[in-house]
Image 1 (cartoon, helix red, strand yellow):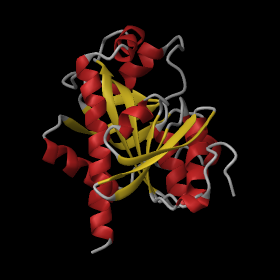
Image 2: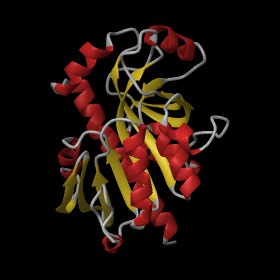
Image 3: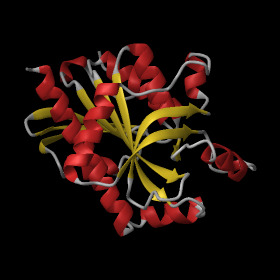
Image 4: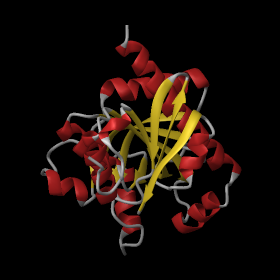
Length: 247
């Protein structure tokens, strides 16, 4: 049956999905794949399939926010996807995290609304450990700048006390902020999927988020390279997991 939002069917037969937020980023994933085939584009969900080192991979955008991510996870599960890696962007919440550095999320602060509609906040938002370790190993092997730690998932850039909230979580060791990771981890865990999240830092700690995101959209060199790196890490991780699976 065709899924109502992502417009994909269970006959696709792909276990590994890489999920950017921006539909345009799907094109940049395609540059690292072979045998690329466009699949669907409905609302924020644009998808294509291809292979990476012989492993079939689905690339699909999810738009912005936890609600869209939750829908994506639910419908991907319905078509047989078992492993999901989000490749997104983040604003750093600590000094020492450079533009284009990668944050491999080991847990997420659940300040989004979507995950809380599923289960109370006491339930942790954590990745699949094997998939996180595969990402970390891939990043290390490639020599990329990677930081493993916590992220904060939220629902708006423009609330009046955003600076105060960010400083609160920064003091408690959170590395960066995004809008989707908590929903991904919670829904995937509840539905029996394995998930990880890789965030490309596009805002230095203390910079204006709006200005920095504008520079990212214009393709600033460091953040553009960070995007390519996170795609590579995610795809390498899928290959690692597949090799372990078929041993």
